[in-house]
Image (cartoon, rainbow, N blue to C red):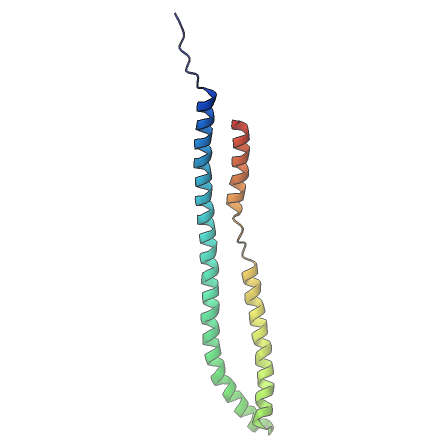
Length: 131
């Protein structure tokens, strides 16, 4: 009586490895795409909020600055151009601080797909053990 062993040839094993590796690569690309899309969406929302907030603040400041310039000019007895210049310097300084904070917030966002990199390392180890 002859035992029937199901042995696969080397070609079949490499074929299976190639298919599995192809599937794995496809899944990793999908994961990277998803991860980067999520991060890009977050950055897009932050930038959009920054732009809208800036426009609203700008409109409000225009009215307030006009009132401040007129009020200081009358209160201090200065010419309007000098009062406008001094107020403009203060407002420009505040604007620079706001821009600095927004840039710092945007630079803290990590756009590197860390999870994908980690699974790629694991996949490389798996592929080594399979060969």
